[in-house]
Length: 182
Image (cartoon, rainbow, N blue to C red; front, side, top):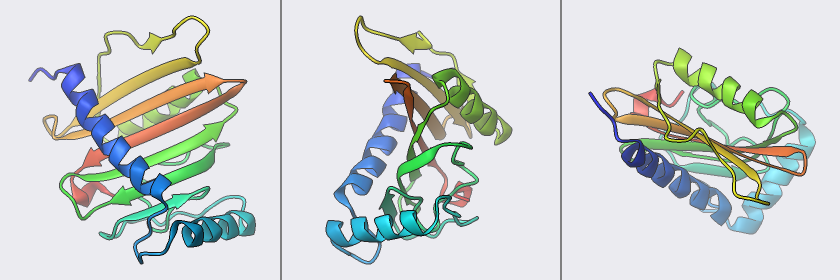
């Protein structure tokens, strides 16, 4: 079966943007305000430098800034060693279920892409050949994107990196069957 890179990226980015919008809005599953969610995230981040995400996700939508959301599907989207979670979100109550992670690392884009490629390939995803694995405008930050599919294209994952000032921001999003959020 042939997959359109543009269609896969559109679906994956829709999942990432939805999840990121939840995270940046400061939503939480109990309806707390953005200020309450931010304060809780800061408290959690200061209490532990390394968050311990749950091994399985719940169906309730969740988002956290500056930490890993409680119940985040860390088996599907693990936090790269040495990286700091900036925001996470997931929602298993929709079809497809969506999850996203935004992290910052001092690792190179190549190292981050290799880590997530290995992770997704081990989970049965197939890399989608990119028209251009790297796009860089003159004077702009280095940006790279990788797309993955499984389940005959019904499940997608996207990894993007932006490197600027010696730091790499990694955004990972997945749109999968709810049973895949672990």
